[in-house]
Image 1 (tube, rainbow, N blue to C red):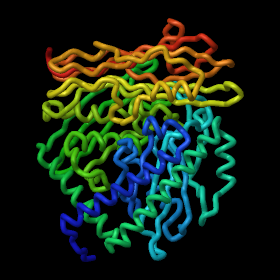
Image 2 (image 1 turned 60 degrees about the vertical axis):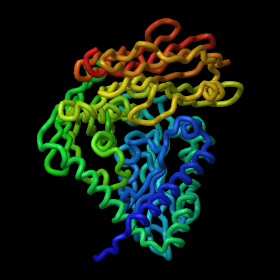
Image 3 (image 1 turned 90 degrees about the vertical axis):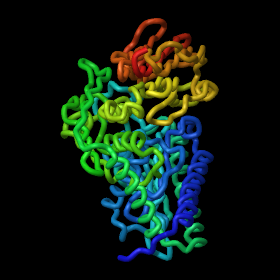
Image 4 (image 1 turned 90 degrees about the horizontal axis):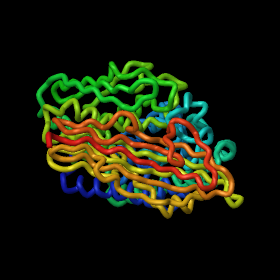
Length: 513
């Protein structure tokens, strides 16, 4: 098919309008959501795809992993609900880790967008829910059935009519149904906003969305391939260790650059574990591809074309390609290491661009009943990031996810706790020519009338973030309850007066001091 080229000025205007439309939908979600995970932590994404599920644009504040997973989810929806079976007013829903975002705690929805009776696009949203039932999230959970409610690929709304059976089984299985379903309906409102804004754009510009999408994808793909093609062909490896349980978890990558494409193979990584740190392929690809783009072509727009030159593989049954019913609720503890593992492999090739490893964000989830009200509160605490050849590592920052540190006022309003302090953990970053970023010291006292259950995700509490090119490792993290070290892979009961201290890890240094 012959396509009409779009001139650069028009293309830039249309591209900017697409991003603005998606950003407005994201703002609508923030306004209509019920949970602080959306409003404060930014743990969500909005994406516009074409009719085949190929990404066109995503909200500016999207979590990087969702940029890769959400379009793939739309394609999975199309396999389950072929295009010819969809109709206006349909809304699709799932939290299947292998077809969604990698764990069941995120609910993804997609809504087909029609124009003159023809399917032209999808609006899609994914967001971490305030609760999904099951055990509170931590790294010790052994299989997916313990993690909570699994939502297969279903229609939440069919032809404009809500599927009340789906709504009821979600409400019945979560601790805070008003918040959870409030966020789900907020996702739907964001999709409808995106539908409206896209319709206005297409009506005013008279552009063919298929031609616009082709132009956006091919230009982005060409830029990404040029960046990869500028590197010498070759094979590069890097081995990175993480805390683990009985044994350290190993990420072993084998990077092959050939022409204008790059393949990352994870053969040699640890086997899948009966714990929730497993990373399913959709998430393995997403954060690997993000690492490639962040290092080689960060200014290229994020869309399908940006990631076409990148491929990944991992043997089935390993921690980066686990078999069902593997638990994956804590997949970020390992998945967040994949961008810096890619950078580590190219550290000698691109020493001025790479970043030393740091620590993923930590979190705690607390649930109970207070003043007659059931609560379930998820709170994020960030850690130190690795240094580079040009600057010190960022302190108390979430990377590669861009999650915010949950505000103290929000923590105290959501659960009966009193924050004793939150401060930068000075000197916890690894020393070097440039020092690694510092972690966070945080303490709270439980003030509830009734005991509560608390769980933790803590990274780098055994294996420190290593430095690069002679830089020293950062300090490991720590977790105590009433002054005694405790295992973050277990669930703990809190009673009034109990004090918890969380110290997040520091990032690795860069270069010899």
